[in-house]
Length: 150
Length: 150
DNA sequence: CGCGTATACGTGTAACTACACCTATATGCT
DNA sequence: AGCATATAGGTGTAGTTACACGTATACGCG
Image 1 (tube, rainbow over the protein chains, first blue to last red):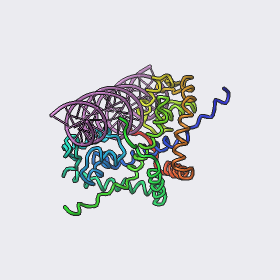
Image 2 (image 1 turned 180 degrees about the vertical axis):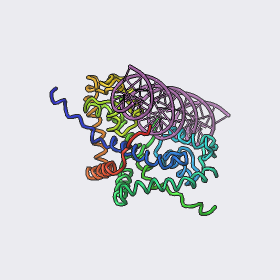
Image 3 (image 1 turned 135 degrees about the vertical axis):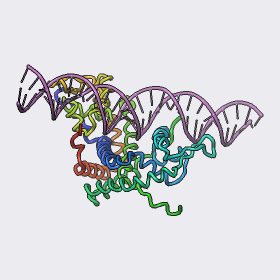
Image 4 (image 1 turned 45 degrees about the vertical axis):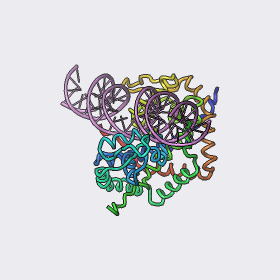
């Protein structure tokens, strides 16, 4: 085959998004490193601080696999920032932020803010607004994980 | 504590982006599952098909850690889709796509296209164009991994 | 030629991510 | 009460991601 066929996927939305995610994550993580916490963990902690919920509820909000969330919480629990207790339904687990977790959030907030500000500065207020709008639009339109099969 | 201080990070660009990435990845992976390949692997394979390069060059293009790329290539090598040979400089590794890899690409392309089309359909041609533009704009503005330290 | 430095990779470690499958408990129906 | 089914989590396995550090080879200078 002479033309070798035009193999695209250089315009793969998913790949482009993943590349951007890699870059952004590195920037945030660099800022948060001073508090020895990653942006993924900080986000989790901040979200958990919104109120006590079960693992399933939390996972559904984040649209993350329950097992993924369970494992991502492990380091936070190990640091004493998050507590996991048996819920009303003994099958469920209630996720809560501890006092230490709240202190950690408070200590990390300025660093996160600096990261966010840097990104906004580099991108420009308008541009980041557009980016957010597009992200939200996509999140609004794209199908949600829906129900698990098994 | 009544006010508890306004802890944000619900507008964290990184977190929103990661959420969107999770959703998109699931969609693409669902389509590609019929060919037992993930979108990350397909992207890697398609990119590798652009020409033989060293690991470092490839990693720089993808803005991915060399060690990450090395490990992500492992499954592709195991499947016989990608070959890794010692380069001109014996320290370097030359990454190439095998004949089997090209066949795999050909077989997978329609599935990827369906995934991409579904995303475009759900988002709408205009919207996905905007999303891409914003992603590219961000990629153009944000600092590149720059130099490794060590 | 030999030594110091820079470069190219690999390994160790750790976290993020998801699917398949297992266990335990709740719930509804008979 | 008893069984079938559904729901909540956990474990196994595998892949994605990056940083710190180690090894090997190249390269330049004395």
